[in-house]
Image (cartoon, rainbow, N blue to C red; front, side):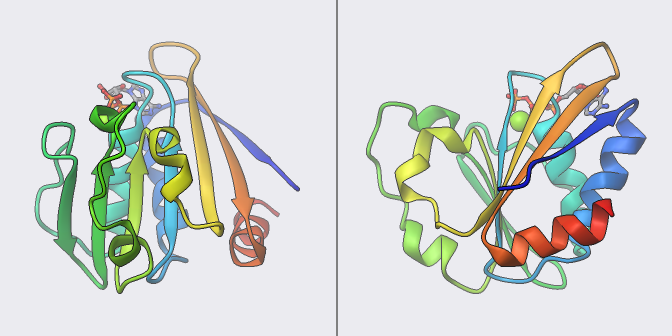
Length: 151
Ligand SMILES: Nc1ncnc2c1ncn2[C@@H]1O[C@H](COP(=O)(O)OP(=O)(O)OP(=O)(O)O)[C@@H](O)[C@H]1O
Ligand SMILES: [Mg+2]
């Protein structure tokens, strides 16, 4: 399985990458975001939301776990950090196999609930403004999207 790795030098570059990916998405695509506190998961999700036409202000769903938006498509933005070690069911099937695009921060905490086909994104903190982003496409559709973006 191919893994794509990109060095990011600024917030703007991160936003560009998120927007590039966002331009290929349609429901019910699922993107997962992993990375430490402050890695840039919400920053990425906000830029992705904008690229799919969400005009409302997107803010971190850390306390509510999920926020839903309307753009060109419905968007589910989740932060499941608070579900670590819990088996709470937020209605995963309706969320991930419905009519929305989903982007999930701290997705490793709900690993068993995730659809098999998804785009896994890991952000690593390198310096104040530098990051690495590692993309692992699970399934043919996301493999093709990565190939189009990176080749
Ligand atoms: N290249 C970059 N990409 C993303 N964020 C960056 C970058 N450079 C600096 N930052 C800053 O790093 C911070 C990232 O915060 P953000 O809330 O996006 O992280 P997070 O991964 O969602 O954290 P949490 O685990 O708390 O949800 C922001 O203050 C942002 O401005
Ligand atoms: Mg966040």
